[in-house]
Image (cartoon, rainbow, N blue to C red; front, side):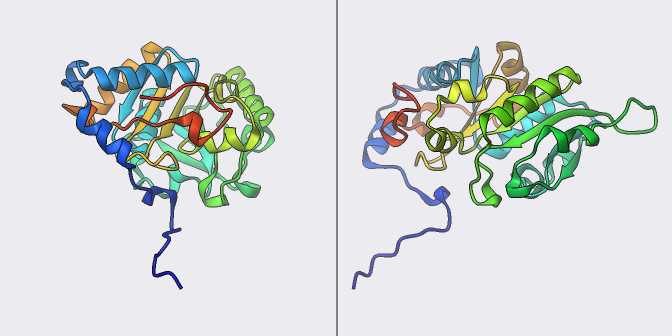
Length: 259
């Protein structure tokens, strides 16, 4: 009987491969706060390309990525609609309230999958007495529901209807490449209607640290300011970035590597 222990607590306990460690040691670096780290700049540009977006921004963690996206799209005193078992409500230290000054409006959903029919009644009416709804946040895959996946048509309907109501929609896509592989769909097409997306390198991809925000150029610049405010501005960051072959890990999701 083998003495080897396989740790199945979470995909977050994956460790960088020898190739990743070599890439880190050999990475060309610069000061990312000055936008002068060439390795990170390439990583951000490639992430934006994969998602069909104008820009990307590396952040130290998925929690910071979600918070920056919320703060960039919801003002203090407004509300964010999210699923009751979702990560941003349960596992991010109430940061949207403590640091962002916004309120979560939580809705329970079967298997963690919200629908527009569930969301619509929760949108606050225009009033001078109530907090106003600013943002809807979805999670795909949904971690605490066992990795359930949003059907793309459901996510797109939520985005379309939310936009009609004057709301923005954020995707906590920490494991969105898992969802794309499960659905056999292109990740850019799956997420094209979201206003902001955060995805993780430190989950199933096996990289040692970090997440990415993608969106419009103006949106990402707002998030860059917020990242610095939250203490997420890093210096020679390229040495912490790993070369991650998404195509090898999730066939059919992407046709190139992320650097």
